[in-house]
Image (cartoon, rainbow, N blue to C red; front, side, top):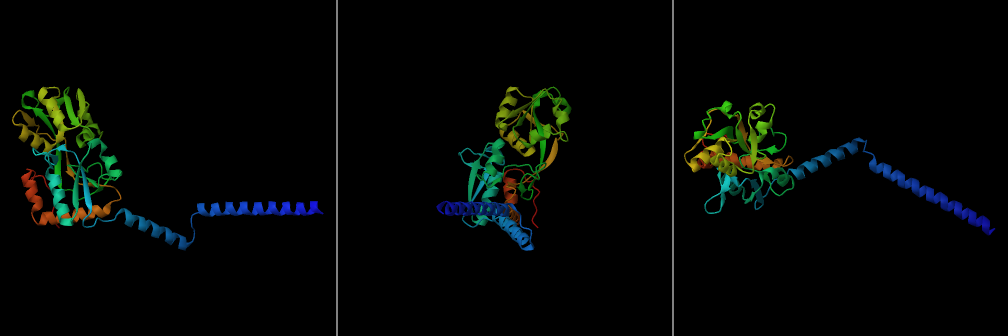
Length: 296
């Protein structure tokens, strides 16, 4: 009798175990199965909308606004004689913050690390003579505010008069710059770059000018605004070739999901154009003939 009772109990236990196991598998299948009802679809859409709202959240008064910039890229961003970071872009960023009630944080970055800094959240934007052409899908962009060109700077004593004269020469360029991308692009100026003896990369343009002065490089490819500033501050001995490599536009690069901050900055920039602040800053840094932002 005891044996029969024991057999019954064991059988019941096995059935219970199987039932629990099946229930567990069924539960997992439900978790992995996408909702198919209309109600489920609406829930998914609502979730996506909420995610968009969170990632595009706008800044509030009192928030910090952290700008990543190249500290050796005058006249847009650099360290002045007093050891302070300044420049057209940084003063413009400060004016935006003054309008919005934000606290500006100026963060110098290595230019070839700019994407890592932005995507990690260390900075809110890349704002420093940043070319948007060819990168339209890589960032959320502000309205363009400067029309720029890529040019070649040479020593006046070099005898180089045009781009064809760069054949067999050593040309310098900043690492991760728009000029470098242009000279490596099959649809850009790669054919021209293929005629150079060497295309040499530098961490910044100050280093490149040291080598140009020493005769170690024959030319430097760079933005025209930066070129004009360098020639003005360094005095005689250099020239910008008349032939341009290309034309481009500067804008502010935000993370791809950060349309909220972008919209706020765009709004402030247009106000600064209306009240004349934008023009005054452009005149101060001698780029008034290059600005393209208009008030609506």
